Length: 118
Figure 1 (cartoon, one colour):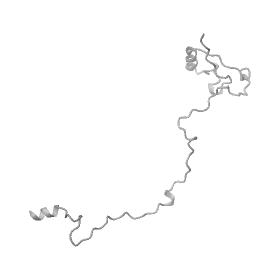
Figure 2 (cartoon, helix red, strand yellow):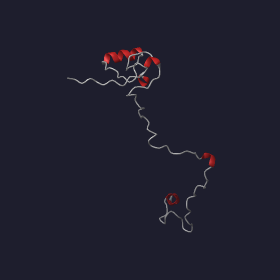
Figure 3 (tube, one colour):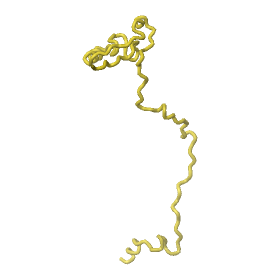
């Protein structure tokens, strides 16, 4: 039993047995990276990598060349209440002018201004 106890105990001389030198742990072999594994890329500038950036809004009206839009170019949309906006949305019409053949992003009318409360 005494032999088993000596086998489990580490010697107090830093983990080496008398007469043996401590070996350093083996280092992993140095393997240079392969050229085909390297990715060729350039960092993207921070100004272009905004994830949820809003696109430019059509606040001044779309400069349309369509003949049916010429009467509306340069004019401003009238403010409508929430019920009218919901009806336009449900029917698939333009939220700004109410026509069925255009959308807000290409509407020739400028954005409506909320009326002031008196």
